[in-house]
Amino acid sequence: MKALFISYNMTLTERVEGLLDHYTVRGFTLFPLTHGRGSFDGEPHMGTHTWPAMNSTIIAMVEDEKMPRVMEALRKLEKETQMQGMRAFVWDITDTL
Image 1 (cartoon, rainbow, N blue to C red):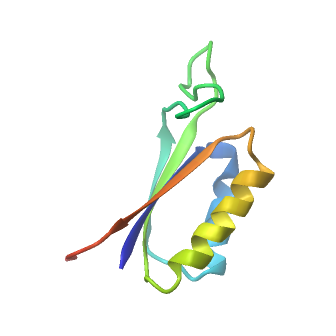
Image 2 (cartoon, rainbow, N blue to C red):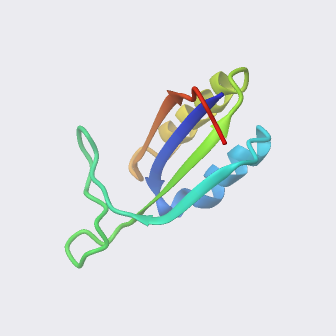
């Protein structure tokens, strides 16, 4: 099992959730309003007058065999919407409750 952390411009929420549905990733937690700025470039998403954009963040549990397809789909979406901003990270899950 893997944990998938995705932080993205909140305008992409419907597309990200649709992608998770397509790959039958059912279990996730959505943090609808998160602040952040990119590691390399792009404008900060801080929800302020100066930087009004906001992020959403999802943490999903994904079966090992699904993860390569899900990450490839996220890479494709990020490439299509590069100016919106997206980051995704994968962690190994060693125990669950």
